[in-house]
Length: 449
Image (cartoon, rainbow, N blue to C red):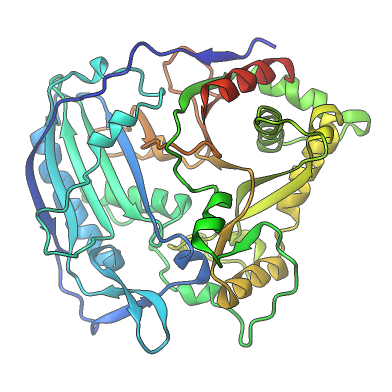
């Protein structure tokens, strides 16, 4: 098929990053509203963990790092007026026993750092180097004991004049789409322009019904009963075993070939996302140790629910409005079944996400503590558009999350413009697996395509 696996030169383990300044930034204007708390939906509160993203920028002679630092800091202060939740803190409401955000204006973290390397020397930006974690701030030594900001931004300059902006944000604040809107607004404020989008902060739009009414069985969710046992089924769990990271590339021609194979006798239209997700599912399930054709396999993948509700959520909804759809079958069918049928299962998983199904999931979360349950989660950054954000100093060269030892999460990214793939309609697939499983996955990735 002509697919390829991106090989990387030895990764730098120490990027020689020095922290120069750590401080808090606060809203540039005081709110006229009384101190308030922000309700969190059951989707929000199930995502109580941090997301770390890095945005790399090439040097721009009109915008040296020092100037960018000043502009970026001011735009962040202005953004905290509109996104006052980012300057707040998570708290447990003692009356309702619910997690919420106290919009107390205690501020967001702001860190200024430098790297002793040029941007061109730190390695291929597409390749997942865990050392990139040095571009987001971990230490909270500049904070009061126990203080946990919901947003910390670190600007790291390189010797060439390029720089990286690393964000650490609580997932309770944004999903990928609303974070993209936040970045658009941040860029607009940095350019002294009006907001690109006025965010909608009404999380009650996704509140549970009263009384809750769970109308579906939801096999894609698992109740949290025994922490030690249930964590074994948590796709978000980080593993301590040795994992290899590899980037698999699909060109637009590769994807077209897969779509043609998936049409089957019906000749029906096949979406790019569905066929790529199905291909990943097959490779991941069949590369697992102790292959058993009768063993069941479940794939999870995010679906934006904004347009699926009745009435639809506003596009500017600034909370978490994605849920995990699923498809399940046995490994025997994944190995020998027609690709068209497998793709149809993935399509049906998204189609299942109707208004009533979404409300049922939200109500399930009102009655249970739990999380998504499956063998592999496909997390797509493919069409979030972080690279399209137009800052005064230009668009990012590349954007990526900090990678961790999570073998059951497969990341899908757009290609690096100007990279080896040379195909703006292709994709990159980042996989982390134990060495023997990676060998199987790589072989299957080519032979099943």
